[in-house]
Length: 292
Image (cartoon, rainbow, N blue to C red):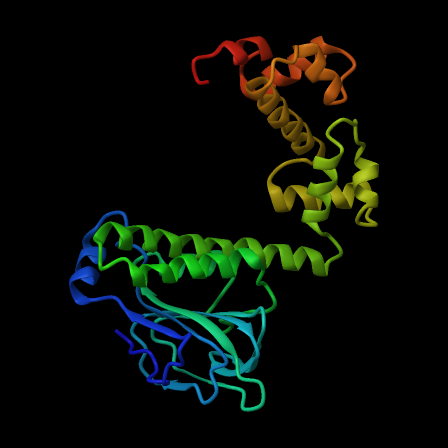
């Protein structure tokens, strides 16, 4: 395993190496062997932190929460800043260091497993470009903090199995964050559109109205939306309405007609057909079904 740096830990820092007997368990367990952590940590305001590796036998995930660092790896040579994420593949020589004037604060995790390369490819990372710029959001920091909680579990195997799957969640989250950032750069903010839909479930929105939120033609908007979500925009909006209808059926005694009107449908029979098309059940059968 590639050793973490020997940077002296401050009081609030953390460096944790997975013990050998746990590594053996993770490498053999069908639930973890394809991707599992070998070491992890948190370095706040890491003045003087640096590392040079010519031989690297696992993978390294690094999230810069604040500050600045410098990285040389693959074809990249430049700054790593707050919100950036680095994933260094196995075997890739690299060097990095904290900025002298504004040293970075980083979360990091060494990992390995047969699916590691697939996770990198899913996030759009390559050996020549191992950096994702400005993708961080609160969910990423929260996920890292959950991952680091493994250091307080007393080497319980079940806890490490859970931790390995938290790591997989982080790696798949990177792909979603990268796609969201790319869409924002193109003037297409999915979160704005989704929130607008959720705030207007009692309306019958048009494609033109949604496209106007992004200053796009309805055809360009529809293409981008389906590329991002896999759904046509109005189809997705209908699914949101039905999702809300399911909640109201489960949690209230409103009639089907009342729920229909709350979701912008003047004709309860038409609403029932839409509901059945999405869920496979009529609203009344859904309410009486055993799954409750």
